[in-house]
Image (cartoon, rainbow, N blue to C red; front, side, top):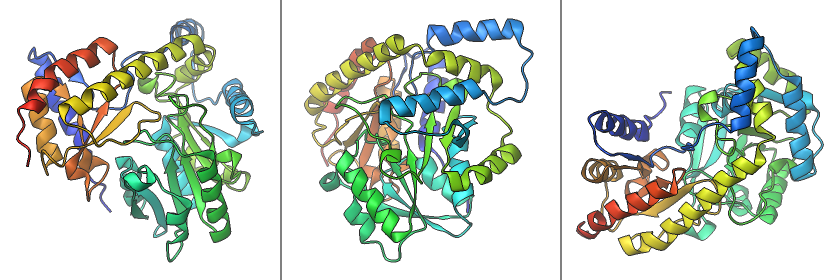
Length: 376
């Protein structure tokens, strides 16, 4: 099956073309920090470049440090050998799906949800079972939704904090989801790439409730290292060797330089938490200003760095709407159809992983533009 196109990439190409022509573009279309890797990670990379020829390698110290992070943050003991380093979270998702499921398996996921879940499932000849999640469930899956599925799917993908909404599952709901899946024989893949980016307190890992879950994570978001392409998969013991066989055949190893830098980044919490403080301020500015733009129906942005806004009173064409917003104001955003092919035509996503002055300037530009849009 052919994956659907990622429309935000089309928006971004237009934005970069406009920028190359001299337009003052503000990039709020992609979920990537505008900051670079922390200073300690960059310094470590410079040292390694001068001293190490590098090659195919998996860093045992990095796997051990990640295992210690799970122990410290989630009180979960993980054998570092269960942690498989990957070239970002996307290969980790491919590994998880390939190790746990077969072609033709039905995998449930929330709608709206990250476009690449659907696309990766289709590319692996698995069947996405998209479940509509609206304001009544805070745009998240619930144990009741999963319990009602007939027949039960082979697997379930959850994300908390979620993309595009930023919503976070409560510990009680995660425990209930784990219990339903355990009873019904549904294997869980938990995308925890936005851990570390929460504005409402600690975020639990699915490993606290289901030790057999496969957990995907990355250095791209909290650690601000998107371009370094470094992620990991926590594989359950029964799938550990299968996942390692897949990574060896499909991807070999994560970049050696990135592994050295990633280990150093784990000690840069003061700098990284400073980024989170900027996102928190940006979030506050948007939550205060968007209602004045007429955007009064949004998902609760508990974490990550997104706002998922209903624009159904203005358009039923989110792609065209976001293109017009970009060409007429220079503010690039993501159309909702990427994340929800059914109802996303009336939604858009703002990423606030930029500087606070950029958020302030984007709001200054958007205020008169939104005020001029006719209500349908």
